[in-house]
Length: 295
Image (cartoon, rainbow, N blue to C red; front, top):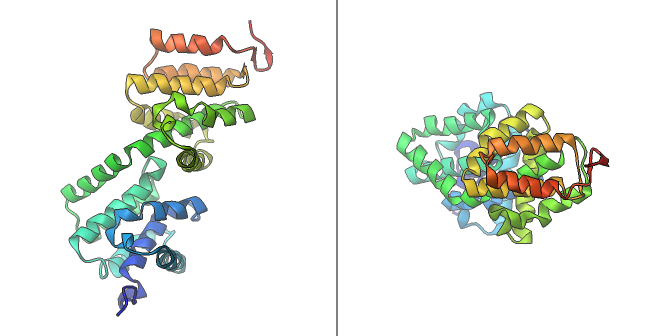
């Protein structure tokens, strides 16, 4: 029997089962995007059986997983518990594989820095059906947060740049360019090469366009994610300088961007002499506010 010969129950192999779960968790609030397909591949080592597959075999298994999710309407969270019980539990039987699948699913859910309601349904079904002990669940989540610590910081930092650019409802090319060019100001993205930053930028843009165009979501993201991820005084100063550099890239700043920077000082807890000095330095290069000469 070949490694990918289909198992009787559900017609899924262990590989296709894991990948259908990955597709399901990323499809709870929208169709699977090209970026999300890439992430499923990039995070595949979280589930060790997938690590042994060559790329062609992996892609074949992924296509089967995508079709399975569509054919069984697994974008409807109400169908998830039965799917885990009927199709995953019989083929993913080893305790270490069950823990790894939870870790894989959690890593994908956290790619946008937060677990949403639909993703939580999938994670809860895995815990309940697989009978994962709380210690196993907690260890898996801790492993993900530790392994992807740098990535999560980089995504939050880049999303902050995008929030600044769109704060006034207008997107200036100089500011967009500065999200990349000024990244050396902020350690989590300053250490990335161009290829790595491109991936992080795409992930941050996905978060921004899906969630952060809404003012309430933006404020919640700044207060509950950016502030908690960039949570040291030094990172706060760096993040604020990065935001100020992006906002003033074209020597013009809008009133909305100014208010955002003022709010950001409070959010990052840098409303002190160092933070004010950074603010003053970048305001000094501003020539116009809302297009009008700045005194």
